[in-house]
Length: 254
Image (cartoon, rainbow, N blue to C red; front, top):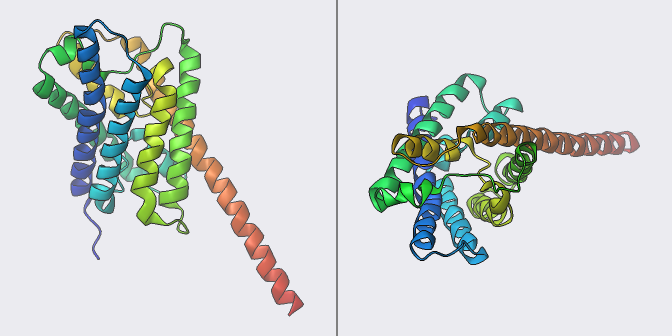
């Protein structure tokens, strides 16, 4: 079977990231709109609904475009795969551009659905730090979140021994679980494109965005994802070496 061309794979990545932002941050923006209109605070139940929305759309995208582009829909994932030799470096930049453009398109989609209130009241679901979360603490939190996601991706989608038909379900539920835990302190992005789209469109349409926080959502996820990929490769290579040693020993015994 002929491999899908780079341009078509980038289109798939752009669509996948756009839909991720439309459904995930879009649900967060809708919740923000509701709580603002009712003068209420966000509850853990609200975070659960938002997490479930992310889980659903990630699952859907993996099973829809995974066969074409690998469904990275996250610059940190692309960089981690390239850093460990699972993705060609020459294709990294086109993927990153496609993901960031997709993020912006998805954010405009939120505006189309929710209107300007989605910007002014829902903030387009943009990720922001909690008042009690420090800058470097936030980088560490985002790194941990990305580490968890990437470690699971390596185990269920990259490792040739994994049951890949379960990949979409496992990765989607992992994303949902991470958001449930990490949404409070940082908004649980662990995806630079997911943060980039709402930041850009919010800024263009008069939303309240602090771009000083943006590096957190780039540095943290990149560190965490690359560390996870390297760690998984180390574990996997150790296992292969052990199996190889056992095979050699058995051959000597025979």
